[in-house]
Length: 321
Image (cartoon, rainbow, N blue to C red; front, side, top):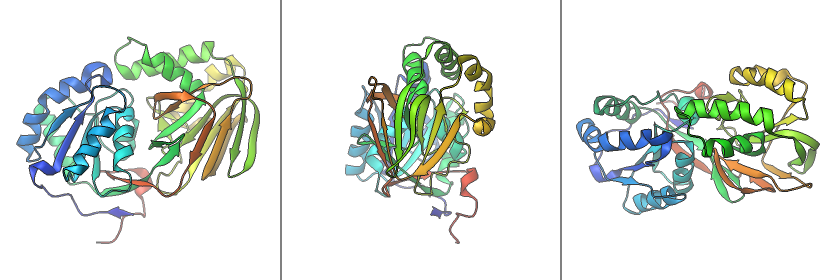
């Protein structure tokens, strides 16, 4: 359900800002340095906190809630947003995304434009978010962690490994280059996938993606029709295709036109398991490497409140005034 009423300016201590200084190859840090001035000018001043490592964003968001924050704005990438969402699930504290990471796919799906540098642009984005409808998005649980966007194993986790060590700038280009490198060097492995208790795949696969929002990895539209408000996860499986064929169809994933390929399989459900009997494989959650297979993913009614200026899947879901 969507609340179409705009968010009004509130007491400064009700706004909190969480900055990941290493997101976007340092871009978030530059924005963070201008944030206090911009937020004050926009009338939305509040504490600004920087993360110091993995998991710290969740701790900072928990502290914000404890201090009565009504809004937590995230200056970072999708991984930082995921950590903050972990703390905000089930609360009435609103998550606001100021895109300044690598992929910024969630922000794009919510209709939040890329954040230009400078306090004036930052203040403009804050005003846009403050007047935007509030939307409750589903939050999946993957191996005990919140997943607001997508997780999985196979090629995309391998690419996340390459991206994490890449020095290529900008970060969005790093994703694209990493994917090409992955297509050239990754070898499919045997995966067994169950959805709501039914075995839907048992064989070699390039990747298994468990998606809530169907865009990730710097614009890859792996499940273009995913609806993060339908109470289900979308399970996309790319089968054992030849490497040259994988390279050929790769550009179509950015357009979402790959879905007709015979080796692309899509399922929906509430409980998903992925095992790799030959050997454990890395997994990612919202682009962050989080461990090794197996995967247990559930959709059990958890939601997080976000500011969404516009999104294609909001059609016919706006509550009457």
